[in-house]
Length: 341
Image 1 (tube, helix red, strand yellow):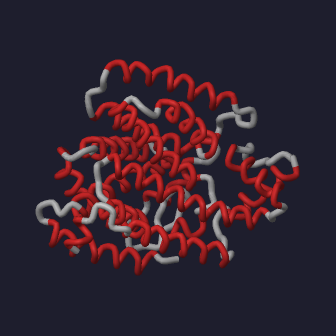
Image 2 (cartoon, one colour):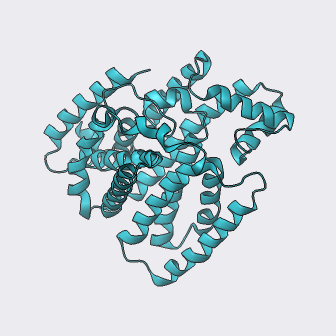
């Protein structure tokens, strides 16, 4: 454990990422799809046939997959399966980039990836946009997964721009893509952006540039010809009520990260993690109290902040890490045992 915690470039992340990708390959080739899989296949077929999609307008993600299917003459099911594997890889890569913004070594990144997959709850709960193993086993090809990867990448780019002045172009391009690919992930992205903006003092020249960058991002989103911008209001709020039912059994293990979230306040990005978690929790609580259950989809943002803080506390061997690691390991085993699909 000492070597694992102290290694700067241990190679552990490559091993973990390889294991996750191997799992994704097995899932893709098993073809045991559930949930909205048929709807996404139908959407891709409609894009290939140049017909009206019906239940949703074509997005950059769908049209990109349709182009690949046309070029290679592949079936939609095959293209979606391969896309799911690449989506998982993109999510792992984005997570590593953001962890690097925290100044974290590879051991922290490894733990963050593991926690994001298994440290949720003790119930096999699956929902698109909730990146646990149960959810990813059927939704890794859905738009919510590449949107989640772009969301984390956007946060990393914003931190980079704040600290070095680089990456402004990415802040113009990535957010509108997220809006078009998966509108509610855009709401999650905004929560993270808000936390990063208010957590620390900005150099005023860089802060001023955020305004035209935001205007440019909105303009790019509005320029997309195939959407009416109704994605957020497409479903009834009641359809999301299950997200807040039995919350402790579905997300309770992530609460292990709360002490680390509070302790790491003075660490790099510690304040940002805490503010993002607090904003996400407050918005979710207020919205649910008002009957707007769709905002429970902000829960993954709160959970991810707990995962990141916990990974840093254990990976950097901060005070009390040994008993903390034992309790967390038990939680991971419980999460993996009871939530495997």
